[in-house]
Image (cartoon, rainbow, N blue to C red; front, side, top):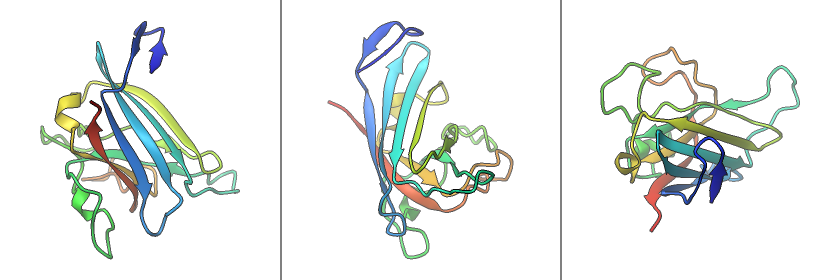
Length: 160
């Protein structure tokens, strides 16, 4: 459960995605919770096992997107190819896709983010995927922000 003074209610998650790293990033695991709130969707994301860096000027930042595909499977060149492209039901330019989310800053292999969005409803993202990319999203390059390879994935499922 999550309690926040902004929404001032106790709520249970509506949906969840269990995130696992690709074969090249087997230590990545995490979870994304999706909460239905009055003004949209509250997303809470926790990741462990992310690539880390000791270089103070090159601490890792990871792009996070909801993709339109419903599977975390793929091929040798793209382990999550079946996650497909960013979720973009209104054909917006990047970074205005419904699936474009804030980046996660890596802190010694851990990442945490919580944010509010109204770019999608919970009902429309069930069965879609959450993708963690190896690089930060530049919020400019079309169509996906030059965000690097897909390093982790989770399918969004309804919590009954």
